[in-house]
Image 1 (tube, rainbow over the protein chains, first blue to last red):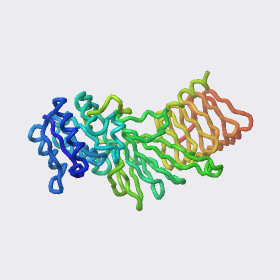
Image 2: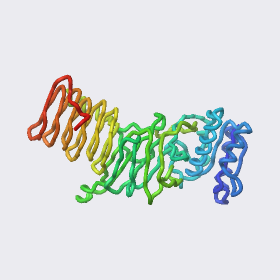
Image 3: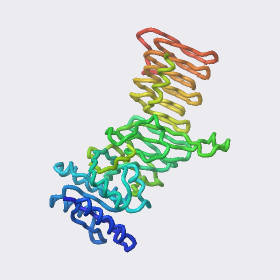
Image 4: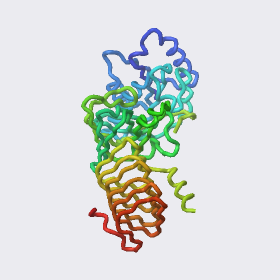
Length: 259
Length: 123
């Protein structure tokens, strides 16, 4: 049985027509199920756990990047305590392009068009990253300023130029070097550091940058001033320990996925 | 032949240390490594190591094959082929099975090409 969980924000009137089209499309495709609308009084975590215990076979969340990140965290956390649910697939219907940066990488269309991907039911088992007790599917990002990184307790990294640090599970960085094989199915995370090139700035070359890549098993990140941002949505304060999670997620993806 | 192989290998670098990066500690990898920044401690890989022109390494180095174009202060143990470029400055002992040194490179240390290798545990 399909369980559709609408995030709280889609209850706004401006989303009514989109939801109506989604429900029509779901009916047309024969994917009918139970619809649950989250509110201030109901949490995604409680809803997912409750529906799984009642026998849900597929969970589909409707919302944005934040909705997907929360759903993945809840599901992964629940699976870690209840391994019998580890094959439950998670579907995602992104509402509009705004605040939906992950959908494209999963090969999903937006609004009612995403229902077709549910119908195809192309399921991929993907790794997850773990920052302290928080899961992420794509990346954890932090600024290089004031950041110190310790890797596998054997060496540390100091960065002298301004830029951004990304701990990558499923890469959503544009212009990632093609010679690095980073994907969410290899059981490992990668550290990607992009800094501005002081030399090139001096010569007024625009968009110049320097890139560094490291593989690691466990990473400790320190920054007193800036938080880590998981999946472009959720902030976690440092110090943080980052590693590949033992839990994996079964995501319904599209044919045009970028991995 | 070798250059062609290494160029192909380096397209699949596992680790790239950029110019604005400083690594402190024991940096051990299994894949190809490109170093353009600074390293203090030790460097070890089972594959190819490329040390860029601007890089500064204060560490003992061990790799299967390597090309050194920057400054290395420490002993270098290479299992197969060591190529020292014309911009390289090496202060330490080196050991390799096959060795090439370009005109202009500076080498201050013992050079050996025997099977036993050198002790890279103590600098």
